[in-house]
Image (cartoon, helix red, strand yellow):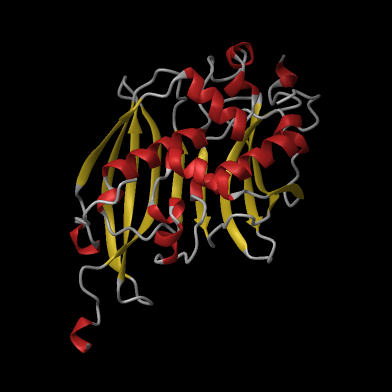
Length: 159
Length: 159
């Protein structure tokens, strides 16, 4: 990514704020390419096998959906944030299949925020990621933690 | 994947059983390729930026680590299982950075098992996925649910 000026430090991530972070439309070729490399189950690679499966049609690997959400997150938020990565997620739900040509829109909500006791220069935020398809169905729901550099150290008064 | 004979139905997934599901060694080129497509943050793409980050060196996207775990899971377990996909994960932890050339080994443990009330032909298992690197450090911890076809329908006595 092109590194931009940092606009968002930990203090700027307000609990309750929601941002729309764009959309992505995976093609059949992209779905096949990801599945071929990382998730070569028949319902992600073969139309006939997918029709015989619970999914009914060829659909994207759930990990591909997560990776597409991450790309939107980086392009439309993290590239301007003092992000320090994530320790993980508390919940990840693949709620509906993602089919070739679906348009997936990402929404990001700040659920909670707290200082990091062990690092006075870092804060944590708990975030909700939701992806909906063009029919309004939610396909992905994730709740996780992100670490962000603070605009001002917690111990700044001591320094 | 080459579809093999199904060896594992829901009834065959014994609570407490553990399986080693092989290993993968991502190259620098593979880490850069994944990050360039899905997670273009500086510490996944640029050595100098990574050295200045909390990670200290160029490291893999956490989503790449998940995708590599999935590939091992498919190649060494799901290809012989009556798998019907997953509704999601209850927990996902990226515990340590993954660096180019690290060798990551996947272990799979069945934590819990239950019938699916709404579908007499399907059962659920709760599984633990753990990836360790060549130093014995755990880099990935996931707990999730998988759906598997039953060898025998719960309502078979009625039919």
